[in-house]
Image (tube, rainbow, N blue to C red; front, side, top):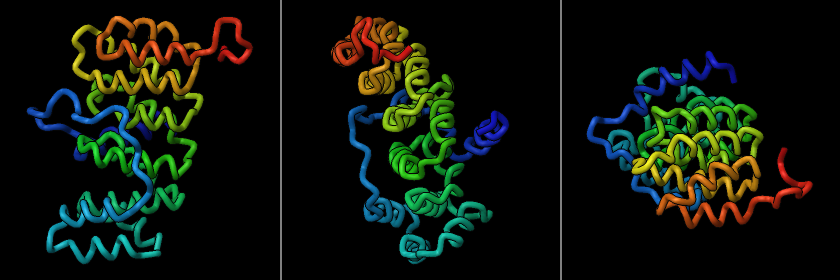
Amino acid sequence: MSEDTLNVMDEESRSLTDAPADLPADLPTDSRADVPDGSLDPLTDRLRDEAGAAGEAECARLAATADREELARVLVEPGRPLWARELAAFRLGCAGDRRAFEALVLLLNHRDPERCVRAAHALAELRDPRTPRAAAALATNPLRSAYALHSVRLLTALRAPESAPALIATLEGLLAPGGPHWRVALACVEGLGQLGDDRARPVLESALPHPRLSGAAAQALGRLPLAGDPTTTP
C-alpha cells in the first residue's frame, strides 16, 4: 500500500475515528481478550440495535444476502450509515473480497473497541498482503495510541515481517513512566513474546521495571531464542 493511500485513508478516517474530548485516555479492554470467531449473529444483533426500527429490515437483508456486488456498493454509496458499511465490510472481508480492505482498516482504528475487534477478525480472514503494513502504520502512529490495541493484536496474529518491528516501535513509545496506554503496551509485550523475535530483547528488558508490564515482559523474554541459537532472527 502506498504512502499516498495511507494519507488519504487517514483523512477519511477522521469522520469515523476522531474521539470526543472527554474520551478516556485508554480503552477499558483486557489486552488478553480473545478475538471472536466469524459468527455473524452477535454482530447482526448489535448493528440491528444501532440501526433502530427504521433500519432493522435493511440490516437483516444485508446480513442474509449472497450478492457481493450489493455489499460492495454499500461501501461506496453516499449516505450509507456506518452500521451498514461495517456489516458489508465484515461480510466481504470474511469472504476474502479485497474490496473490503480500506473500510476494514478504517474500522480497525475506530474508537469503538467492538468495531476494532470485528475489523481485525475480518482482516485476518481477508489475507490481503497490504494488511500488515496498514496495521503497522496504525499501531505506530503516536497520535492514535489509544486505539492501537487491536492493530497490535492483529500484527501478532499475522506474524508478518512487519509485525515485530512495529510492536517494538510501538512499545518503545509507550514506556514513559505513568504512560496512560498501558493496555496497548501490555499487548505489545505479550505479542513480542509470541513472535519470539530476539530483536525485541532490549525493549522487553526496558519494560521489566514497569509494574503492569513486568510479569509479561519476563515471560516474553523467556520465550526468546537463547544467544547463539541459530534460529535467532538476525
